[in-house]
Amino acid sequence: MPDSQITKSFSAASITQEAASALIVAASTAARDIGIDVTIAVTDNAGHLKAFERADSAAFLTVDVAIDKAWTAASFGLPTHTWTAIISNDVVAQLAHRPRLVAVGGGCPIIDNGKVIGGIGISGGNALQDQQAAEIALRALGFEIKA
Image 1: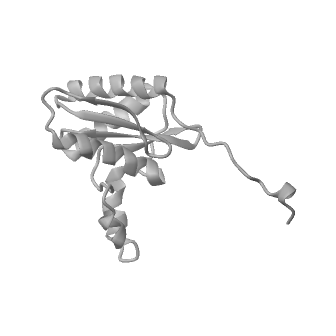
Image 2: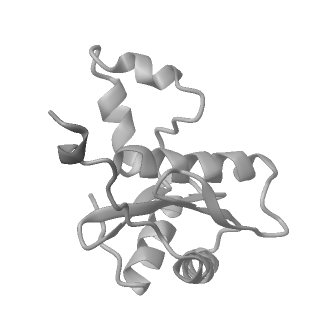
Image 3: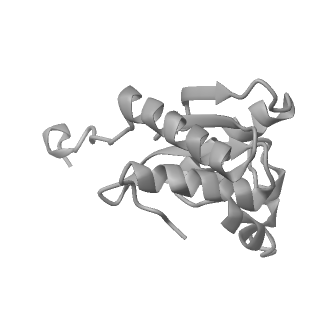
């Protein structure tokens, strides 16, 4: 195939700084309403940190966990709570050894018009509370929720 007929690039949608910051505010409000002190991380479509906030009383370990939850969610476009079932399959069990993979609730892909544009990760409550806060924030901004 001649070089002139090769597609050399493609456009990839990614979350804006404005939307990432708005998600931080919405997630912080949701966490406060649930009654938990959390760390919130938002990544772009490639898993790079875009926005971040840690409540004064959130434990220091929540920093890395929130960032890694957002990274995990953005990586395959799957919520982190689904990973426990995925890695229980012997065929893909080795993925559990990936250093940043988090297989508990609280990380959700950020989906706009069917495309993963980033990930949000919340850490500080139990896994269900973290997941609920993330989903509430995504709904508040009109993003799609993947079950």
